Amino acid sequence: MRWLSLFLLIWLLVGCQGAGLPARSPGPASETLRQRGVLRVGVRQDVPQFAYLEPATNAWDGFEVALGREIAADLFGDPSRVELVRVTATQRLPFLRDGSADVVIAQLRPEAAAEVAVSGPYFRSGVGVLVPARSAATTFEEVGSGPFCVGKRTAALDTLRSVRPTATTLLVEALTDCLIALENGQASAAVADLPLLVGLARQAPATRILPTLLTSELFVIGVAPDQPELLAAVNATLARLKSSGRWAALYQQYFAGLLPPADPPA
Image (cartoon, rainbow, N blue to C red; front, side, top):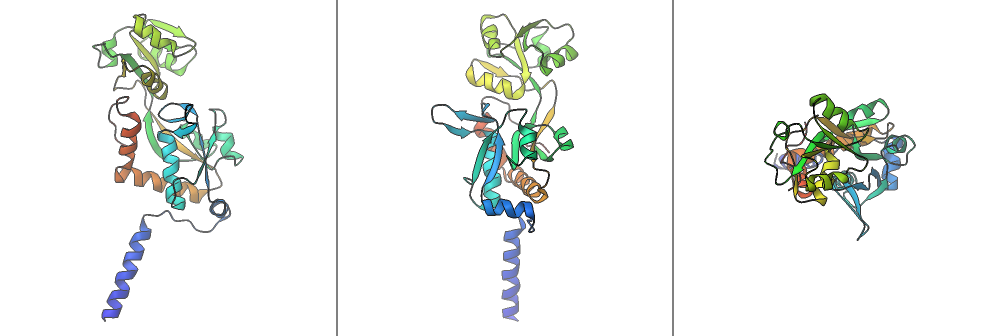
């Protein structure tokens, strides 16, 4: 009876250790990935704090880069087993379809599910507002009618005109021009997608991003459409990061002092 009890205890321990791992049954796509031993992750190289290549060190860093390494750690037991593939906004979906990348972590929206597989959300974004640190405004309403510095022909401009039709605008070709406008008082605030505002706030510590977004959208991870096992593994990693507090730690690491505290998106 004691031998039977010991056997059952060992069986339970082994089963519990494997319970947190994504199920990966043998299949053509997953077998190719396992044989290669490296996860190809498509990321941007020009979005500070999200995914960027440091010119001084030629080293990759950012929240989205860290997510890719977490997925590799769960797949292979080693976070360094990633090949980071540079993608532009227009290359994100084609790279998944033609096999240039296994996953793309580059601010994809859920609508990408029409063309590729997508994970659950990993970040909540939207159109935000940046003000000088000296500003007394704590909400968009308190900024008043502007002037608002905003990029020409952008979704942020459309959003601003929708929520504040009477707003005065200062239109710029390069969003970095908004920093000059904020500094010299030509503009009361800058309006842009949140990742772009994070980049501006990183350049100009005398600014701050207001806590309320004008729109709300989710970022998801794109996965090659022929790899359902990889999609399951990606979702398992996201679930682990959110439940263990690791997501919160990464958020703090990359966005502390730039963005208000946030919970993982459900």
